[in-house]
Amino acid sequence: MWHSLGPVDSFPNNEGRECTVADRIVAVFRQENEFRAIDGICAHAGGPLAKGTLQGGIVTCPWHGWQYDITTGQHCLTPQICQQSFPCKVEDDQLWVEL
Ligand code: FES
Image 1 (spheres, rainbow, N blue to C red):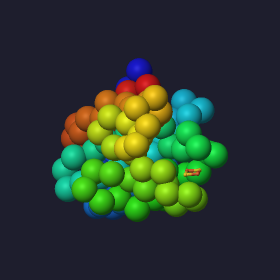
Image 2: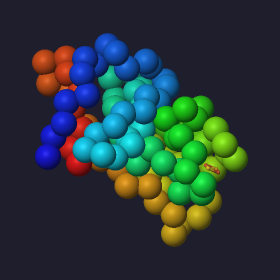
Image 3: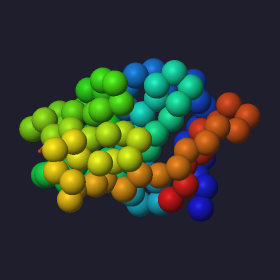
């Protein structure tokens, strides 16, 4: 099901924003006109991935530094760890995410 996250312009470039969607915490990242959404709760100890630093498509958890690919949700070092990722789309300057 697609959920509206509001105006595209409300999402800062090269940063994450935490959104609550259908009782899930989702980390939404913007890189120019590309949007990615992954499970916002770090698999390590529940850190807020949306508040992590974003560099080159990799987010670093602000709590202990675990790193994830924001496109796939894949942990950068451990193949068995993968955050769920969610499709995003832009329509009429509104961002949508599918959960
Ligand atoms: S909670 Fe994210 S690295 Fe520990």
